Image (cartoon, rainbow, N blue to C red; front, side, top):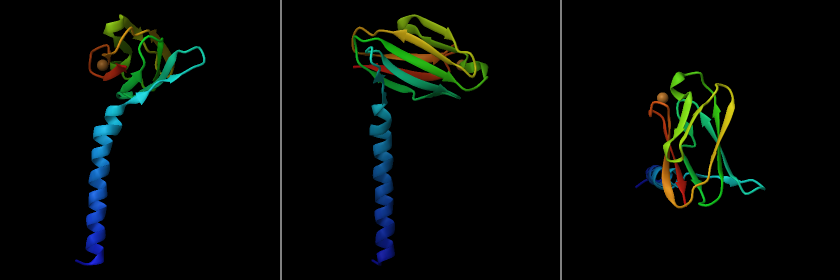
Length: 125
Ligand SMILES: [Cu+2]
């Protein structure tokens, strides 16, 4: 085997490892909310054709504040709904809108647009 073939093989192997890591660990891990001085766990979520991040990790028993930064006028994303916490809120385009709730215990809670087309999850640990 020549050196360039070995390098191509190694490059391919590295790409496979990276893709697996990305999909099975990085994506599954989600984004951990940061705590502000008052103890509220905060996460900024960009709304543009979907939610970024769409997986938010928080700790149980402390207030959670999700700030939705809506960067589009597409009517699909004009409402945010978090059924488990009774939240349904209008998101003005070009603005940030905060919703707050306090999860009692561990669990997974969906958030969606008003029509249930865009999806995200809050993972409470
Ligand atoms: Cu929608």
